[in-house]
Image (cartoon, rainbow, N blue to C red):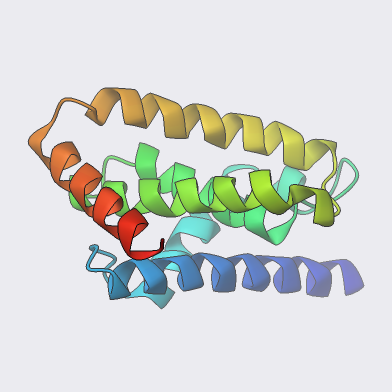
Length: 152
C-alpha cells in the first residue's frame, strides 16, 4: 500500500515538472497542445515503458526531473507526435539537461538517474543531429537564439 502511494507521488511529481516545462514553452510560442494532458501522457508512457525502474524495484526511484526528461525523450521517439511537438519536447529536454548539469550536485541523484540521463542525452543529441538540416530546425534555432538574447 505505502509503496503504491510513493509510486503515485513520484509519478505525479514528474508530471508536474513536465507540465511546468511545457507551460513555459507554450508561453514562449512553442506547440505543446494542452500542457497538463501532454505531460501526463509523456510521463505515463515513460513510466509504463519500464515500471521496475520507476517503481524503484532495483533500488532507488529516479529523481522527478529525470523522470520528466525520460518522458520528453519518449515523446521525441514516438512517431505519433508531430515534428513541431517533438521540437518542443526537444527544447524541454534540453532545458532539463541544462538544469541537471548546472544544479545536479544539489540533487540526490543515484546510479539509476545517471543511467537514465545517459539514455535521454543520447536521444537528445541524436534528434539534434537528425533535425539539423531542416527548415523547421533553422526556425527553432532562430527562436532559441532570440530567447537567449532576451535573457541576457
